[in-house]
Image 1 (cartoon, rainbow, N blue to C red):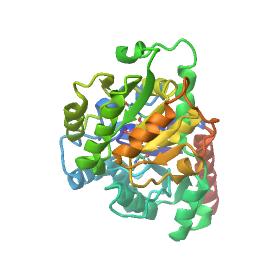
Image 2: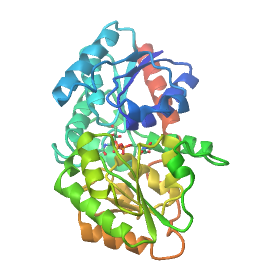
Image 3: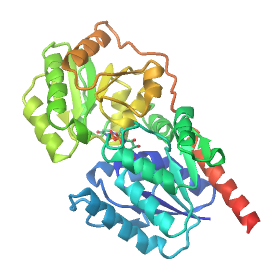
Length: 373
Ligand SMILES: CC(=O)N[C@@H]1[C@@H](OP(=O)(O)OP(=O)(O)OC[C@H]2O[C@@H](n3ccc(=O)[nH]c3=O)[C@H](O)[C@@H]2O)O[C@H](CO)[C@@H](O)[C@@H]1O
C-alpha cells in the first residue's frame, strides 16, 4: 500500500509523526510531502519521529497571501499525486496544506483520510482560515478520524455517514507520550535558557500565535502577563512565535520586563519538558489544550471560543479570552500556594493509541475496497 502524507506546519508534523511511524510499522510505503509552511519551527521534529521527506514544497513561506500559498501547494502536490500511484492521501487538521491536500486528492480520485476530523467552532471565519479549511477537508474525505465523540457528532450533524467516521483519540497524545518517554530521565534541555530554571519561582508558561488575537486582544493579554511578572514570585516563560506581527507586539510589551523570559520557539521535547515543570499556562494554541491534561496542568485559554470544549468540560481549561482582569485573577489563584495545583491527569483527547487505530482502519478499508474490485 502506498500512502501520501502531507503536512506543512509544526503542529501537523507533531500530529502526523506518530501516524507515519505506525504506517511504516504496518508495512506501508509512505511518501511524505512537506509544503514548508513552517520551516524553522520544524527543527528536531523530523528526527524525533524518524520522518524521511520524499517531496518538499518551495516558495510557500515567501508567498504572503493565503490564496497564493493554497495555489502553490496544490500545484506542487499535483506533480506528485498526478502520477496516480497512491492508495490514500492523509492530511491532518485545518491548515492551508491540509485543505490543498484535500482538494488535490479529490481531483485525482485518491481516497482521503482526515486526522483530527470534526472540530468546529461553528463560525466559518473564526478561527480564520482554519474553520473553513476543516470544513473543506471534511467534504473531500473518505475516512474521518475524529478525536472525540463530540467531534464525531459534529460530523454526523453535517450529514457525514456514520460508517466513515471513527473516534480514535487525538494523535497529539501519541506524540506527547513519545516525547515524554524521551525526557523521562536525565533530560538535558536543548535551549540553554531553560536548562537552568530558577527553583524559587512559579513558572507560568505562555504561548500566543493566533491571527485573530493580533492587535488589541494580544495587547491586553500581554498587559496581564506584565502585571503578573510584577508580582515577583513568578517567572513568565514565553516562546515567541516567529510571525513578525506577533513578535513585534510581544517584544514591545515585554522586551524589557523583569521576571519574563522571551524565548526562541522551543524544540518539541524542550516544550514538553517545560509543560512538565509549569504551574499553569496561558495560551491560544490548539495543541497545548490537548497536551495539558496529560500533565494534570490547569490551562487558561486566551480565546473567545474553543473547538476543544472537552478540555473545559473535563475541568482543565478555562476560557479567559483577552480579558486582562480574568487572566491576572486566574493565574494568581493557580499560583497562590506552595506547590503547583495539578489535577489528576486524565486526558479527554486520547490514550496514545490513536495512530494505531487510524492505520488499522485504513488497512481494513483498503482490504474491503480490493475485495469489492
Ligand atoms: C485553530 C487551531 O486551534 N488550530 C490548531 C493549529 O495548531 P496549534 O494552535 O496547536 O499550533 P501551535 O500552538 O503553534 O503548536 C502546536 C504544538 O507545538 C508545540 N510547541 C509550541 C511552542 C514551542 O515553542 N515549541 C513547540 O514545540 C506544542 O506542543 C504545541 O502543542 O493547527 C493545527 C494543525 O492543523 C491544528 O491541529 C490545530 O487545530
